[in-house]
Image 1 (tube, helix red, strand yellow):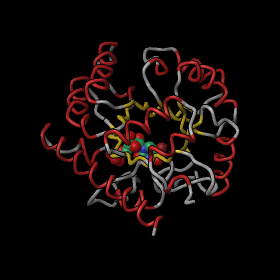
Image 2 (cartoon, protein in one colour):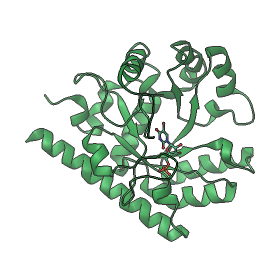
Image 3 (cartoon, helix red, strand yellow):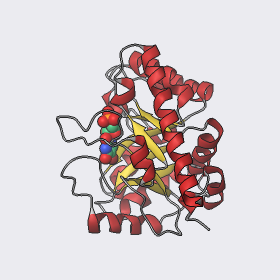
Length: 267
Ligand code: 5BU
């Protein structure tokens, strides 16, 4: 029997109880898309334009909600409508990094009320397990899922080696809520199944001037990514039609790489 991640997305449903993880696996299989587009634009109109353009091609939309200058509750309503129209889930890339008591407040309160609309969020493991306990106290009753930042795509990252290993161990101890990692490669033992979401993906660019490092969809899926996260590679194109086409291109690349991974495992 090949390792869980070498099996189909559908068959991996059996390995997850978390409702957000299950919904994501189902959506990936239904749409034949392992593409997450990161919508890092700073006005409400632009966020909605990009999401409407890429929606048909993605399983997941990633937000940095705190960069939207004219944020209001209507943006969340419209995002939710688009997620129903196009069938995708939402991941707020909040990168929580504080003590449990503080992240409870940051996750549930303030202007953004992240837990109320975001199926997934993520957290650094640097504070220790209290951060997971705090976030779980808010997110679990709502059926949310947490991704731990086990590795980063940026040059010189300190999230490697023993830090990454200790992060995986923390995840093992909270499997109901922690559904996987933001990472650059497959993590965990061969018999374990964690979702691996990988940012730092672009075709035709090696990186940016601020330390971002890019790999291709084929390279990251080959190393174990379940979901590829693409930002500027998609929303950076000029015009809604070009953005839509680019999302479709990454969707096809990501799916072909997944099929290739399954084929290689069966050979
Ligand atoms: P890009 O435009 O494809 O470079 O955007 C990548 C997105 O993923 C951006 O929102 C980052 O904040 C996010 N990101 C990342 O690039 N690398 C990481 O290790 C993590 C998040 Br964690």
